[in-house]
Picture 1: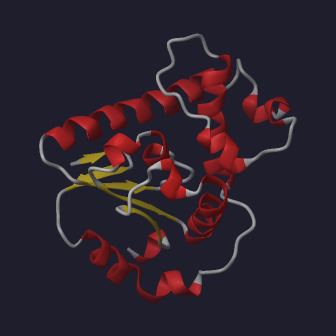
Picture 2: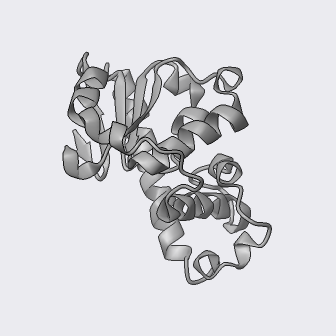
Length: 179
């Protein structure tokens, strides 16, 4: 089932299939990036801004991406964080994420046990919903630079095992034009 950029699949060899398709393209791009993609950061900050300035009830409680991105202190003064001019974008981002998370939870009840997030950016589903993530294999797929940064940052800043993140959580990287 394809919903937006999120794919829910139920196959047993997903990781090996992804790694086969990625092949040497990902290895060529396996460099240490010091910053994630700007769009990924912007979406994470909008999700945090939703919690910080929009009236409750919040569709999504997500400030983990904000901690991961660790923006400068004045991040809310950035033009792309203006509360009024970005309200529509913010609403779209959090509504889509909530819809997908509800769908994933529903599909888990139907026997779907693998969740692939294409263009994952700084998605935090597995970190925020370990009770669901522990019952699924979750694959986050994105550009190599963003995923390298996320893998490195996540390991050091969140200590996955202590946060209840299961062994079935994978951060994969690919150059989309190679798929």
